[in-house]
Image (cartoon, rainbow, N blue to C red; front, side):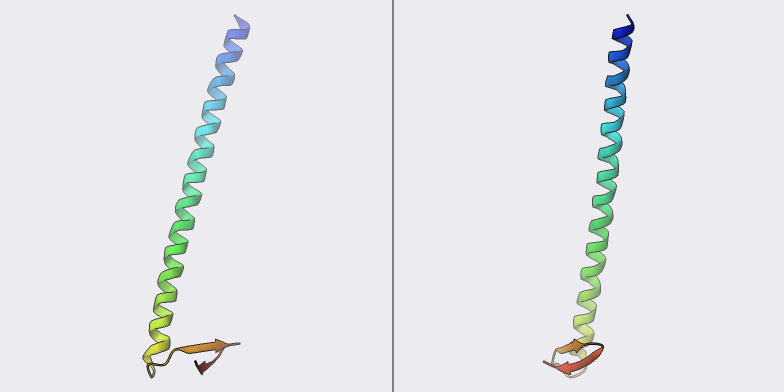
Length: 68
């Protein structure tokens, strides 16, 4: 009887830990996706600002810009 209870308990613990791990992994992937989308949106905005001055893309070197 004791071994049956121990087996059920360990199975329950294993299932719970697996679900927790999957949940945290899903949350991490969601946050990475949000960060990636935000970063790509910033880069698109930066490209628009860089080309809005004179239509020539600007290249940044140590904070200074020069025409490409």
